[in-house]
Image 1: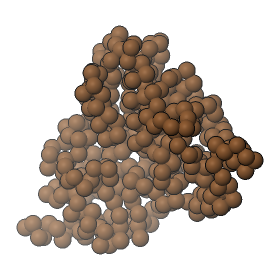
Image 2: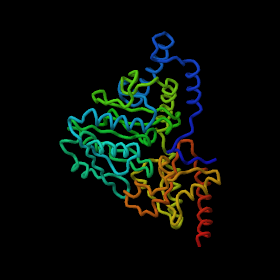
Image 3: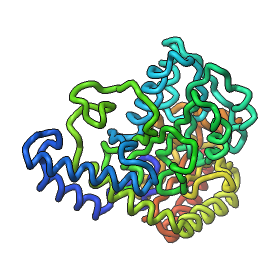
Image 4: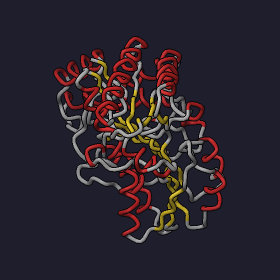
Length: 379
C-alpha cells in the first residue's frame, strides 16, 4: 500500500500506540479524583502538558487539551468573540479557511458579528495590504490558517503578527493543524495569541489536540461542566491521549529538523506531474509546505482519479477530506481563480516522513497509466 493521504489523517506511530496502551492500562484513574491514584494520574497529565509547552516554547498554563482541530478552532474563535464582544464585533479571516473556521464565522455573522473575508492570490496567499486596510477600531480577532489543507500555501504569519502587534484589543488566531511538525514556527517569539493543532495529523491518535492560548487571553468556554482544562473545556481528561500526544509531538518536531527527504519527494512529484500533458498544478512550491501537492487532470473529475488509484492500492484524496464526499468544487481553488472544471477535478497528495521516493516513482507510473486509459475512454 502507498498512503499519500496524510493531511486527512496519519497512521499512529508504533511507539505512540505503545505509550497510549501503557498509560491507559496503568493510570486509568480519573485525574480529578481526590485519592492518591487520581493524584498520580493528574501528575502525569500535568507532566505531559509541561512537555508540550516546553517543546512549543510557551507556558504550561497556556496549553489546553482538546479533541482536535475542529474543537480547538471553535473554542478559539467563538470563545474569544463572545468574551470580547463588548470591545468590538469585527473579525477578519480569509476565503480559504477550513470548514471548522468558515462555518463558525457564518454562525457569528448570524449573531451580529461582522466578518471580513480576505482574498488570496493565485498561489493561495493573502495580501497584507488588504489586511491592513480591513482593520478597524472594532476588530477583535484575526483568524488565518497557517498552512492551507488543500494546496499547502503558507501564510505570512510573522508579518500578520507584526501588523497588529501594537493593537491591544486585536487578537491573532492561527489554525496550524497542517503546519505542526512540517513548518517551523516559534510561537513564543511571535504575536500569536491562539493556535490550534490536532494529534492525528502527526501520527498521534484521533480525538486529541491542543489549543495554545496566551495567558492574558480570555475565552468563553464551549463545554461547561466540571471545570477541567482550567475551566475552558470541561469533561474527564483523556490522560493516555495527552501523554501519547506529547510523545508524538516530540517525534514530529525531531523530524521537522530535517525535511530534506520530504522536500525531495515533493519536488520529484511536482516535476513529474508538470511534465505530463494536460495537468495543472495548483501548489506553488516557493510558498508551500513540504508535504502537500494539489493538481488537476484536464477532463477528469477528482473522485475518478482517487478511485482508479485506489484499485492500485494507492491512496490520495480530493482536496479536503472533510468535504470531499460532497463532490463540490473546492472553495479554496475557486478563491485562487481556478476554473470550476479544474476545481472539481483537483486531487491532493499529502506526504509524511514515513513516505519514500520509491513510492513516489510507483505513484507517477500508475498515474500516467490511469490518465492514458481514461483518455482512451473519453476519446
